[in-house]
Image 1 (cartoon, rainbow, N blue to C red):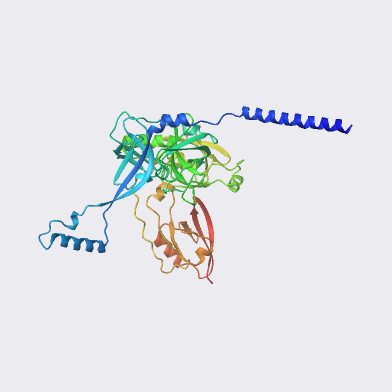
Image 2 (image 1 turned 90 degrees about the vertical axis):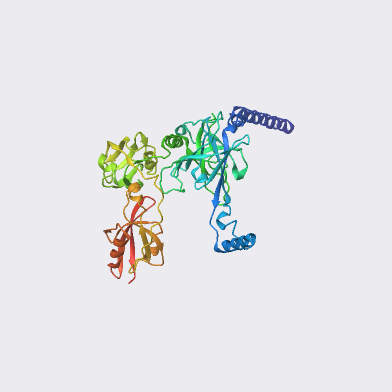
Length: 474
């Protein structure tokens, strides 16, 4: 009896193993195959370029000038000088090395603005090792894009795909020159869309595609392909604590790039629309206050007087839910979509007001995103400022772009401001319930504050307004 039981048990165990093996084999065969990028690389690798820059170094220290003059005196041996210090050739310094790609057979090349900005000479190296001197057609710092041109013809090129059609989880491939290792390929998936990442610009006109592709220094400006071989992004930034890839990289959407490139080819500059509102996120509290089912949209803190928004009928405390057919889920979506349209465009705006949806039409103004960056304003020292910080003027374009009026905290010492949690860069719009429009006005209000007690200061940080109580020293 015992032997019979053991035989049955062994049979069941053996049968179970067979069933488990059959199930696993079935699961494996049912899995779709992973993509093979070899054909894509072979087809499009010739369209990828390496971008190298050179910068002239003309400044010399006084010590270097003395040494050069002494060498020239020895060379001239007291005779009439045949060579002057001005005749010494300029030194050249190799600048950034990045990536790019051809978008036409007659030599138009796209790369990042930060790769070529400030360069005196730009070289484009093709995959067949030919080297061309590139001409800058146009630079656009807000989008971090640059359009170059090389004197060549019959070149291979790639085409843009629809970045709006990209889904989180889609496979993507990057080709570029990480650390100077030209024409390297790396694959991954789309991790997220619509990312707003602090970058090199003061304008918030970008919603990046986030991927886990291994992007490193030198990949900047290279293309991000979908499985169909279309460019759906331009690699621009990484988040890293080491300077190398941590699997978090950001690409400029191809639909943004196509718009920028079209304008750069046409005029050499990019014009963006301006709405003229100061806005903030719609959080849970605001959604509950205004009777919304869930938090979404851009809350209008203030409509700039005389702005396109004011002319179109937008009011303070409106919540913008849609702009020209684009849903506004987060408040950072609004400047991104506004920036995709040129000045003079009439756009439809859907907003939430007094518990009801309303639709307005707004004709966009012109954003000053292509103006030359101005020098940092001089910090005004408030002699009788008891708050422990100093302020400076806002840049000239800030009121036009954001609708803000006020002053910016430029220096923060020990005192009530630091104790209350203020930070350098905070914009102060009111002090002790008095509107602030200039450093001089701020200093006048600060000098008239009481010697003790609490005073309110209204600040804007990261697009959100709040009131902070400052406790003055007794």
